[in-house]
Image (cartoon, rainbow, N blue to C red; front, top):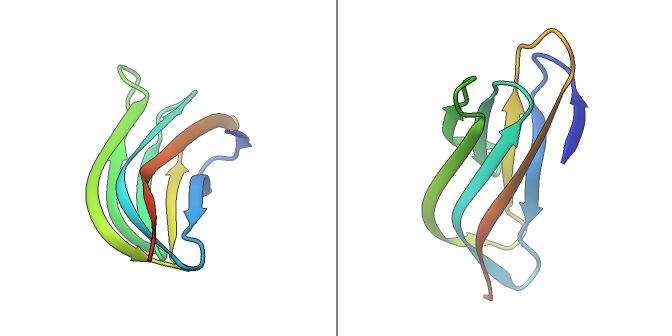
Length: 100
């Protein structure tokens, strides 16, 4: 969980680095916050997908089936919002970590 996220600042809500000798199968992520936001999934810094929440539903659910993500790779769920005041956000990354 990340508290007091300032407006227009892309912030990591959840992240992981694949450990040495491991390979990761990325199956999804969820995110939520106290304000609308644009969420992005990034693998090794490259945007893979994005979703935006609204006042009617402040939750996002990403579904993936990306296998073979190598050791040292990073997976991030980030958020940007444009509210006047700082906001709180949280998220999780889901998948399966296996020996390489």
